[in-house]
Amino acid sequence: MSNLSKRVNSFLALFRKKPEQEFNLLILGLNHAGKTTLAARIGSESEEAIRSITPTTNQTEKHLRFKKLKVCMRDVSGQWRMRQTWHTYYQEANVLIFVVDSTDAFRLAEARCELCDVLLDERLSEVPLLILANKQDALGALPSAIITDLLGLRQLGGRLWHIQECSALGNDGIDVSMKFGTESIYISSNYTFPMPDHQ
Image 1: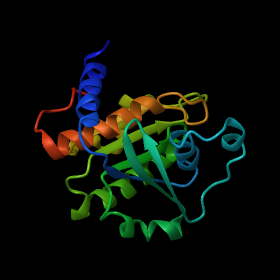
Image 2: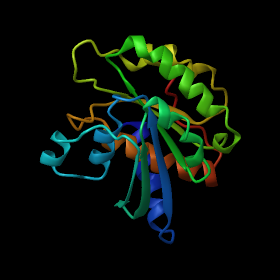
Image 3: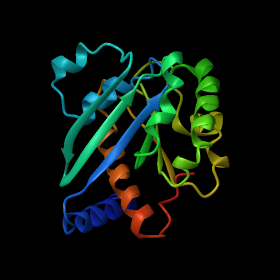
Image 4: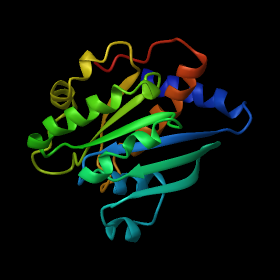
């Protein structure tokens, strides 16, 4: 078992000793990055439902349970007009998930600009950031190391962040992503231990 897995399991064990609590996942990213499919995977929707998903044009909210935790998950459309409303969801966010299409190198520059604008908001200054490099099962997908550089993640300073390769459609890397989400909340609110080196 990796060091990350051991630490995740130990933190989740501590979570189970605490009273039930709810946390908020905010899912952002450009349109066509795969956010809605990702949200459906996290919500354990059926394979049939996932295969028939259409892009979100506004926002969706789902309440579910992950392990012993209550989760409110908001998936907000990445269409241009909806990006102007993203800021209205920042206040309640406990974890920010930013999804990128690993196969679309051209739009990664646009994604970087949008992510920078999001992270400049003070309401998200202490919120852990999870970058999901989606569509890793597709031909031409860029590895997370290259996406890290293209998004400028190494310049984020002391912010708690992690990048995870995944395939929402293929259901790969989703469980690891959710484990990071729960662990990062616990660390940011109760501990000052650094996350395992992901850089």
